[in-house]
Structures are given as structure tokens and as C-alpha cells.
Image 1 (cartoon, rainbow, N blue to C red):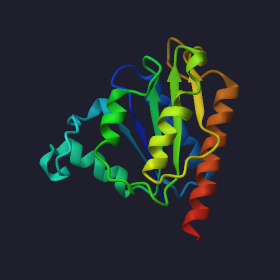
Image 2 (image 1 turned 90 degrees about the vertical axis):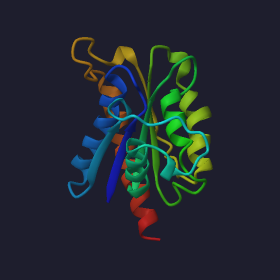
Image 3 (image 1 turned 90 degrees about the horizontal axis):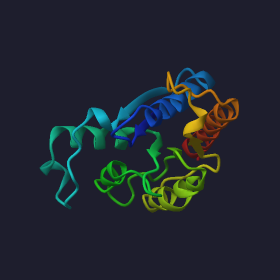
Image 4 (image 1 turned 180 degrees about the vertical axis):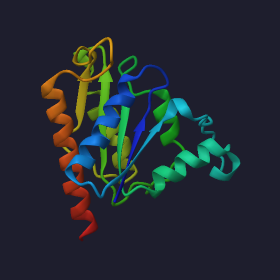
Length: 180
């Protein structure tokens, strides 16, 4: 199985590190799982204008192809102005309606305000569900206070445990889908 993590932040390290922590946790559970991190800071994903995918640049094509080829996915977003990042929403606009059918689509979000912990549940979950993704119950919101300011590593043990639980639930669900 291949697990692809998508970091929807164009600035900072926290979201990318959190998504990568899910990938690492998954490999610790099952070393046969292949992982790949797609950090949107490293790609020039063009603005979605409704054109066929073939009309977009190579980076857009590459990112959409990697995500489409994954067996299951974890999407990470910072919370900006009580919403998911525009970069992540733009990326998702490149996919057809059934893009994530039979795929587990986990969510991890980072933010400065505890008031934003429901943004992934009320904004990103419906979008992933629209694409027919199966969204786990154990998605993770990480307040910026859970990170070490010097290294951007997660220092909150509770958050680390929730990341481990998310990886475990995602693997369990994806195996169930694959064995249907």
C-alpha cells in the first residue's frame, strides 16, 4: 500500500512536519507501507480554472497524478482565517468527483487558536467526502503550542499519541477496504 501525505501550507514548517509524522507512524506500524510527502511549497500548482488537467503545467500534473495513484491519503492544512488553506483547496479543485473512492483520507491541521479545532471537521471533511474519500474519526488538530519553537518538533505527548492513533486507524480502514 502507498500512503501519500499532502501538506497544504505554503509557509512555515509545522503542517509539513505534522503530515510527515503521520507517514512515519504508519511505517512504524507496517514497514511495507510506502510513503511519500507532497509539500505544496515545493511545487508550482497552477490555479484551477476548470480546464482539463492536460492544460496545466508539469507540477500540477505531477501532484495530481501522485495523489490519484495513492492507495490512501492524509491531508494537512494550516488554519488561516478560520478556513483551510487556499493552496489546498485549489489543489483539490483539480480532482474529479470520485477521485478518492475506496481511499481513506485522513486529516491533520495546525493552527494558532484552539477555536479553530472544528475547521477540518466542518470544512475539509465535507470536501473529502464529496470526492468519496472515507474520513477517519481520529483526525488531529494541533495547536501551535504543541511544537517546540526552536525545532518545530511536536513536543506534546498527547498530540503524538493522536497522530499514532490516526495512522493506526487509517491503516485499519484501508486494509478493510482493500479486502472487501
